[in-house]
Length: 85
Image (cartoon, rainbow, N blue to C red; front, top):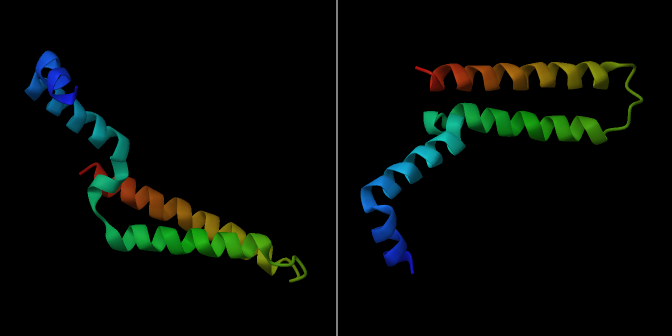
């Protein structure tokens, strides 16, 4: 079935369409920035830990959560910026 679909749709056109859609869906990941992606993953892990921590820290947990959210935004902006070059 795949071979007949490939022939009906026109092989090169189908491959090109798949490549374009794949690129559009991966978006930022195509920039291949493993350190930024690892930092983003670590920041999200920190955010999750802060979110489940007991809130009896005199406002420091909340402040740390806000700063982590800002850092996440900055890392995402950096990834997006580098991906646009």
